[in-house]
Amino acid sequence: MNTRRLLLPAAIASAAALLFTGCVDNSTPPSAAPGGDTGASIAVDEAAVALLPEEIKSAGVLVVGTDAAYPPNEYKDADGNPIGWDVDLVDALGAKLGLEIKYEIASFDKIIPSITGGTMDLGMSSFTDNAERQKQVDFVDYYSAGILWAAPTGSTVDPDDACGLKVAVQATTYEHTDELPAKSQACVDAGKPAIEITPFDTQEAAANAVVLGQADAMSADSPVTGYAIAQTDGKLEQAGEVFDSAPYGFPVKKGSELAKAVQAAMQSLIDDGTYGDILAEWGVEAGAVKTIDINAGT
Image 1 (cartoon, rainbow, N blue to C red):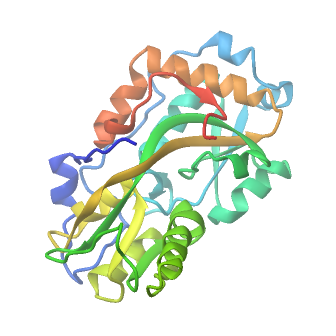
Image 2 (image 1 turned 90 degrees about the vertical axis):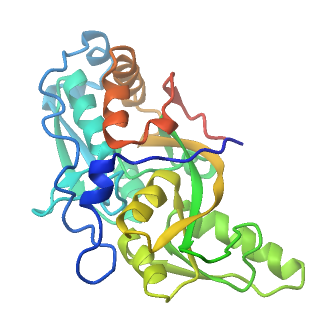
């Protein structure tokens, strides 16, 4: 199990300080947010293009589903457009494959069904690749993220001893469906109070609940928690260390050749340095991988 601390660029941290309500506000990206025209100078990788399913290649468009509510991975700018380091990676992926990226914003739990139903080609919402999800889709794994808790500054929250605490999460994330239920059951089995798991529609709302004293702590993926801590101007702090590292994957239709095309294009982005540059620009390079795998999250 790897432990690490994620450091965000100083410009992002200072620009994201809370100014008015003392709560997290992800509706507008920081003025110094990285990103931009990511794919402008990226050459098409013809070997990766050759692996594309014919219907996607001929259409020239890759339909990508995202909930855009998990900063800094994927969230919305002031105009409601997706932004974040995941978005920059997918923009670069589109450039490598010579495809236009069409983003469709949907709730997290609707994305995989939309892929299996054929209305979306690829998902981009910080999906943890695991055996259960692999029953429905294939994953192209591109990043390693762990779980990290945050709590009010000065508190003594311990993620390994959280029985009886109220913990905020974004609904349908791994933390909501797997991590916290398991921890809570362990509490009950030990004769201790269960954890009160409190899901919210967005990560912003989950972080705000802790800032406002409505929850004792929050649990999220490590880059997301690091970003939330930076935004709260000292009101939140890391609780414990990063644990349970697992791969993020882009889900695609099971058995589709798209997985191999995306794998090749993402590996090309690693090999030419674009991948590393994007992660470094957002301050999340601690989770970088060297090899793009398919369905490695077992």
